Each structure stands twice: as structure tokens, then as C-alpha cells.
Amino acid sequence: MKKALTLVLSLLVGISFAANQEVAADVIQIKAPSVKATTINIRQTKILMDVVNTGSQSHTVIAVVSPVAKKVQLHKTTKQKNHSMMTAVKDIKVPAHRGQKLTNSGLHIMLIGLTKQLTAGQEVPVTLVFEDGSEITVYARASV
Ligand SMILES: [Cu+2]
Image (cartoon, rainbow, N blue to C red; front, side, top):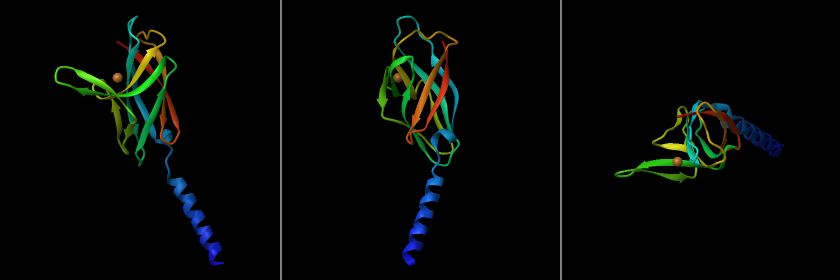
């Protein structure tokens, strides 16, 4: 009897624990997604947006996909003495209750090996993949 009760209790704890886990895609909102328009010979460009986390747990962007580029990387711009440099980062943290702005001079998404020119006004589909496997797809508007 005691054993059965323990089993029931641990099942209940398990269920409530699962219910407390937020799904990243349910609590994250993407504001103002944009992509820098390109000229004919340019093969890479940046995507910027405001990743807002309305949830109470931190989440992480682990990958981004877009059909207009052969490769998509998560990048960080760092200021050097006379120039700025971009390096790839493994993931982008999205802190609870606030989020993370992706900017020209900070963390951003990099489209590499563009399969076509992106002209102003065009809408580029971008899918963000989070640590729990959930995804959000938005359309980044190209602007100069
Ligand atoms: Cu970059």
C-alpha cells in the first residue's frame, strides 16, 4: 500500500513538473524582423529582430533556417580598435521576462551563401529553433 502511494505521488510530481515547463514558441514573440537588402554580388547579409520572452524561464535559440541561404549562422559583432569583427556563436540566450535584441552591432543572424538577391520590400522566411525543439517562423522584411 505504501509502495503504491509513493508511486502515485511520484507520478503526480512528474506530471506537475512537465506542466510547469514552458514551450519556448508559446512565450516568445518576434518583433520587427528585418533583413538588410543586398546588391547583385553580395552573398551574405544580416537579419535583425527583437526576440521578446514573455515567459518566466530563459530560452535559447539553437539554430535558424531560411530558404534563401545555403547556411545560416548565429553571429556576434565585436568592436576591435579600428574595425568590427563578426564571429559565430553556438546559440543565443533569450532571458526570462525580457528577451534579446538582435542588432547590427551585437548578436544577429547571418545568412551566408544567398541563393538570390534580396531587394527592398521582399519578405524572407526565417525559422528560429529553440532548445526544446519548438520553432517560430517569421518574415523578415528587406530594407536598405
Ligand atoms: Cu554576421
